[in-house]
Length: 156
Figure (cartoon, rainbow, N blue to C red):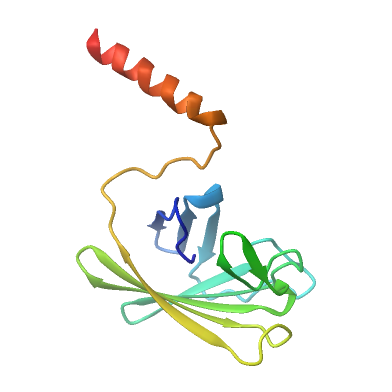
């Protein structure tokens, strides 16, 4: 969840036994069990891996394994990808550090791609708007027409 040029919004939803992390970019949704269950068998691989969460004090910790080899180990930019996720172990930490701010920390550990694990920290601030569906609009005409229709309804 490294920020890029656009569509960096995410939504975190929590129930008593799950957390859902929805990314605006490509509208991925990870459903993360918090009930202490073990990871899936190593033979079961998924695009977004197999996530398990737990609370360490006020910090939500999500550990993800079992990525498919079609998933990269790290995407430093939207145009580039490094490694194959088949040996990736990703640890993410979400800590509320203020009324409108989360600290997002991640550690990438993939011994077949990198010589040692590395980590990063990104502050995330609350947005007051909705999370939009990620979609391409041909020349943005679709958005223009949607807004024109809404303005016409408002005028009536």
